[in-house]
Length: 206
Image (tube, rainbow, N blue to C red; front, side, top):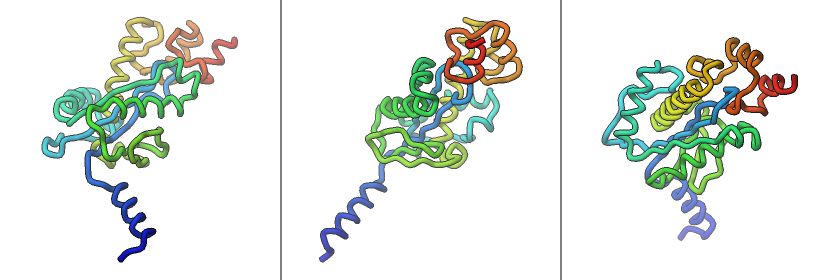
């Protein structure tokens, strides 16, 4: 008869790797100077596979848009969430990213047995979770999440461009390109710029 200690260890091991639904989680928008950070969580349907899933950065815009619709149609469930510019400035970009990830997981219609997160940091979750470096290229559910987050954030940037066309958000998506930095210096920061980021702070302190 196994000892109580070994039985408990076996039970813990079984519970951690228990079979069940796996959710992939990824984010988009940590590096830009403006706009929210967006996260997505996806539970794929093994019986309804999606071809062409990959790290969103390795896919063209048209392919991402097509896969966005296919993921939404074929996944068992998915959730997209964000942390606002105000939350980014108040918490810092890492903590805001983890907050957006937690919101995405909590927004899933089905509860996963385990969550696989791209990167090396985990949000605070009520389910088992594992961080996977370069997970968006290794795990299909994370690839799917990366596509949802990227497309959703790009769409938000198009909305920002409609509101503030002087900055060119439709082209650089908020990233600190030479054109964006030049527009920032010329026109100052708009309400959607992240004031805690050095290039924006420098313009505000001029």
